Amino acid sequence: MEAAFLLKLQSAGRLNDGDRERLSKLCDDIRPFHARRDIIREGDRPDHVHVMIEGWSCRYKMLADGTRQITAFLVPGDFCDAQITIFDEMDHSIGSLTDCQVAFVPRALIAELTEQPAIARALWWASLVDEAVLRAWIVNMGRREAQDRIAHLICELHARLRNVGLAPGNSFELPLTQEELSDALGLTSVHVNRTLKRLREDGLMTFRRQQIVITDVPALRKIADFDPNYLHLPAGVGED
Amino acid sequence: MEAAFLLKLQSAGRLNDGDRERLSKLCDDIRPFHARRDIIREGDRPDHVHVMIEGWSCRYKMLADGTRQITAFLVPGDFCDAQITIFDEMDHSIGSLTDCQVAFVPRALIAELTEQPAIARALWWASLVDEAVLRAWIVNMGRREAQDRIAHLICELHARLRNVGLAPGNSFELPLTQEELSDALGLTSVHVNRTLKRLREDGLMTFRRQQIVITDVPALRKIADFDPNYLHLPAGVGED
DNA sequence: CGGAAGATTGAGAGTTCTCAATGCCTGTGG
DNA sequence: CCACAGGCATTGAGAACTCTCAATCTTCCG
Image (cartoon, rainbow over all chains, first blue to last red; front, side, top):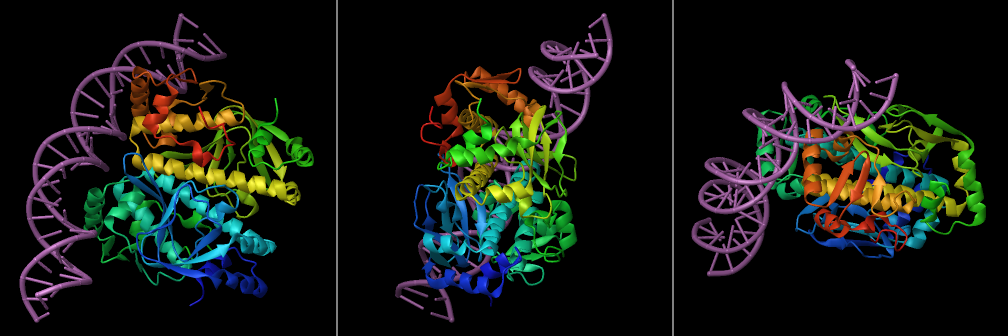
């Protein structure tokens, strides 16, 4: 299978064989992480940039009262912390959700790669998509109640995973507990549980054994008010 | 008064006089907008980048059910839509909140400016701060109840406005209605109203006639669990 | 002096949370 | 192969928070 980050950066278009060749150097130093470990912590000043190769991780912040909010899911192909080439220190943490493989990329290599305009552009593009996703999450948490909110997140993940070849058909692996899901949605796990039940009963989707099956794609998108435009995927990929 | 965007980009450091001179070209084409007008709409493909010079605007999305979610407040010095140099079309709208002055910057000028490494770096830095603010909003909406959520937003705006010289002391102008505030916070205006009353009664802050007065900065930051680290301001500015 | 928009308040309904108990599944050790 | 432990998932009941709908008050302006 082709490296996910190539599939992803592809979407930014304009990569030629030389660029793809250069990008393959990202994989020179891949390290494994167990599930539920911190890959980077708030306050760290890592000297490598981390890229997800395999498995899932998430950005998160802990609050003073011990609650957690997940602000992003990172899947194969996602850059964890390109911002560290600009900022002094991390303002949030990144933790693995599953066992995973993470590429450690020296800052110097990033600097070298971004001398290629097409690569710089692709990275900027990826960063702007991340931003668009954050806005979509804000809309989701601010203006949708639980059922529609879950539906929207599932539609988004479905579209993103398809783009990197990880969601054949209308199902995909979602290696999260309901607790983790609730930390991303701004809900409690109890309420997520009840709401998943309703989605199941309504014949929209099921989530069992870490497997999402979207039973009725149009209906799920409808209640979620999902429009994939913000993901800026290549034509066709976001469509059903 | 110095142009706000210079003060802001300053925070990225490393700008020399030449850079500042070049950046002044951003102001060559400034146009006025009345309050409550769209500056750009979702789906637009503007050929200028817009920069806030004076007044307030906001990013927002409308939902199918007619509700609105504001995803960012834009104040003097903020770039509205740098992403349009990469994406084909806007995935959200930007509307003026007050009468304002907006610089229209041709894409070509942006391209020219970003040939200067320090300027490119400053713009990237600004974009990463925007991203960090979006994450902070997600945490805010996901894990704080109304009073703490409002408190956090006010602390953030206070810090940001100080950085561009718009918040002397512990008060600042916030030219929003309670309705607009509620659209940013994911609440209803009725609930915002009641909660503002409580903040007032608790001696933390007041909001009357578009004027925020923070009565007790430490207490407000405490209930908001506010840490300005994510704004990556120059040392000292974020502090009380 | 109106009018209109925004702010404030009340009452009741709906959503989500908290706390706690129970059920289910999986991996491990005997 | 079976029993058991631990982590998740599921369910119930009551409390807390937020929303809706509507009325009333204020403020701002022409």
